Image (cartoon, rainbow, N blue to C red):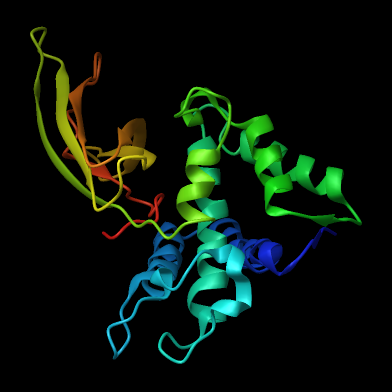
Length: 249
């Protein structure tokens, strides 16, 4: 229904199609493990090194399209354009996800994009503008109601951060469970910013998203997460459990 304006925007067509495969797995098969495995496989295509030591993600930005094809990195179509294009859309979805409304923000974003450009050709900037129209307050990492930070990192750039989590589960002064955490971001430049999801493994084994941490440059954020009224303490804290962020690890 929506075409791409030039070769620089073709990643949307390919990536959005690939993203549809993950939605099929999530809503038709209803198997959380299959969903996680799908994004693990996409991650591997983008970041794994081939026999010559080259990674697809390092070749260049998605806006170069099929011009990135070369003999050193192999099939750029399969190893970069489709999976990274899907990953960009997936990351936007996960940043917009809300515990109360679920995917409502993301659905409204995609419906607006299709309605606005139905029967037309859209550019990467057209899509970015629609995302900015629907972005949540948490996504405004630069305080300007723009998504430049994200698109510069993953669409127009080749950034790939690494994350490390140190955490512990204890009790606060009132005896309620409390999670202490420190999340470190590395392997990026000083302008890199990201929302990193924090999850808890509950006493019954279920995994629940509880918060997002804002990280800038090669730095850390630490804090305590009070769990007032929780009868059972969680087993542990996790980050990026659903491969929400395209990262080194």
